[in-house]
Image 1 (cartoon, one colour):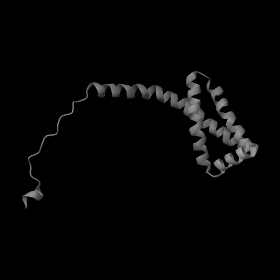
Image 2 (image 1 turned 90 degrees about the vertical axis):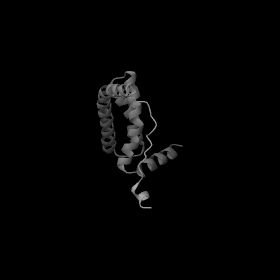
Image 3 (image 1 turned 180 degrees about the horizontal axis):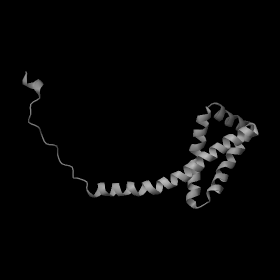
Image 4 (image 1 turned 60 degrees about the vertical axis):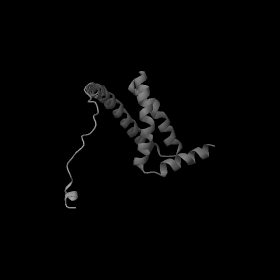
Length: 127
C-alpha cells in the first residue's frame, strides 16, 4: 500500500514541473492555513501544521534532505507571506468593496425601455 502511495505521489510531482507542484501544493495549503488563522491560531503554529505533511511527503518520495528543506521552506515562506499580506489586504479592501456595492445598490437606476429610433439607416435610403 505504501508503495502505491509513493508511486501516486511521485507521479503527481514528477509528472509536473516544479512550478506546477508549487501551485498544486499552494492551492491545497493556503485555504487550510487561512481557515486555521481565522480560527485564531498563531501564524507559526499554522505554518507548522501546514508544513508538516509537505515535509513528510517530500521525504517519503526519497528526496535528499537539503532539497526537502529547500522546497518545504520556500512553500512555507510563500504561505506565510500570503497569510500576512492577504489578511491585511482583506481588512482594507473588503470595506471599500462593501461601501461601493452599497452606494451602487442605493443609487441604482430603474431600467427603462430603450427609445425607438425613427432614423433610417443610410443603406436603406439608397434603395
